[in-house]
Image (spheres, one colour):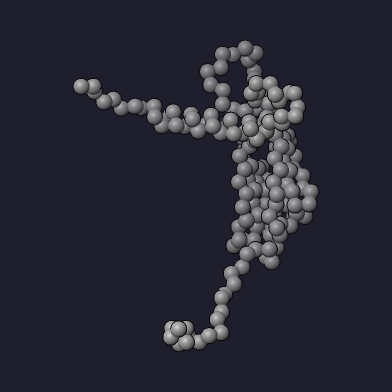
Length: 165
């Protein structure tokens, strides 16, 4: 009879699979098939930073957080046109030693551009951006009229007649 052994690397393999899958998906989002340069085998020229955006209904404020570790805030540009927020930047590859033998290569370098549609009611004139600990946080007030409101459903039939029917 064979002995059962515990597979210690199961979770590590799952984390590696998720990381590899994320890299493939990010590359698919950044490829421009109409340019010859991008048709070369997978290169780490572009990457897409992780973004989360939401509207805080209680504080009537729009939040957009962009994960940009290792990027100088001077290398990030923010544009607003109509109701679209455009983020451009670059994570520059800096190596102090000329030749190295890489054991792991998980950090993507290069230029990025993300375009986000702003929700209705965001005051684009009052957009503010702050860079703290590698996270770019963009905020703006939201007009109260643009926030969803609950509508009460009323009936004209008295409750007694409803039960009898």
